[in-house]
Length: 212
Image (cartoon, rainbow, N blue to C red):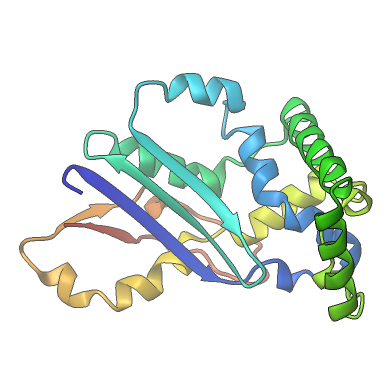
């Protein structure tokens, strides 16, 4: 669409990288916990107010084998989109109210699902087919009770600590686009990021986003 900026950045590595199965439940809903907690100095409510009137959206997602961010904005609000992109790497926060809210929402949904015969049947079939393997288990209230906010945030940070990991493969396939005079190259906010202590990734100093 005209006047629309799309952001898509994904990389290998998701919940399947969790070795301690006691922390699996926390990892599985870590992206939802982060969204519920807000970013930087803003809790979720304050962040929504700060973004009121802006045409943009961005979401982190962690699946079994991938993690990444998808988003979009108007041309006018692309700077704010990139600021939020930056904050998902540097501004993940603990928030008791946000955490309690998302856990309550999950609990309500899971209780209602358990009361549905079709969902209960599907849950049972899944358990049998997967031979009751914990990594393939349907998320239920038993797993929800194992969720820990600190463990969830630590796992999220272990995934989202180096933007180059998400962007490099796309950029390497777009060298012709980078050199195309019709393409505008925008330096991302993550360019100045310096992250240490990663067990799986090393921080880099700069990346670029292509906007046609």
